[in-house]
Image (cartoon, rainbow, N blue to C red):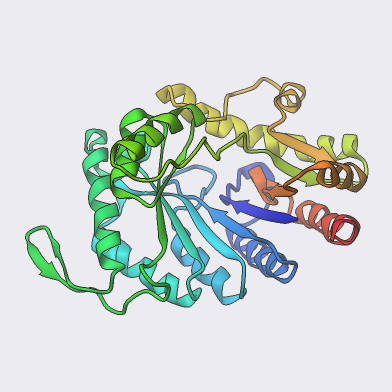
Length: 323
């Protein structure tokens, strides 16, 4: 039985909480998940958002690493064009040492036009900047001197895990998939159909077949003693979340699982969010060959006490029955 958590720290006005309170709650939840054997905590980054979406995942993961001992961390995704490659390498090396090698990184090119305007970065430079960041990180993570922009550099200290954090490339296009095969340790497509371009490029390069896409639909689970009441309480947060992402997708024609929807009932039909009773989740997990649960406990401005209510139900009414 595996379970994972995701945070992006959206804090819309209707949430009625401070950013500091949400950060503190996430650190408590990270410690809770570590104690119960959680597998992964994933953070992502966006910039200049009205709802305070997390802009800096590395310091947040450093704080989480200090409160945990075994759970792994993933940045999905780190937006390469907005980072200085050498400083990013140093920050990730420090994080890798703080966490004792529990960090994986997914690099992406970004897609929100307002963010590129904020940083003064032309969107056409995304491929070049992604490639430079990935190649710089991989070189820096060897712990050896390397060539960078025409000069010899050496970053210290070295990473904790040999070779440093695992570096995956994210994306939703054929060029991104083929670039991942050429320069990264793996590929995490936004659209599973793009995986075949990655697979084809891996084979063309003479490496072992990575097989079919390991990426399926991402589904977020929350628990409530009464599922209908749970939907009434949590549904507005889920709706806000999916439509905030959907608005970006609609502007830029992106391939991702989020689409704007008119109401909570329509959102329920997509299956992207599920509010279940403990009995329903136990039945699902028992029937699964690979039981897994993905939580997004503070999703879309979710009230902190409501997030904890869901997690406590998992701790006390689900885990004891499936272990």
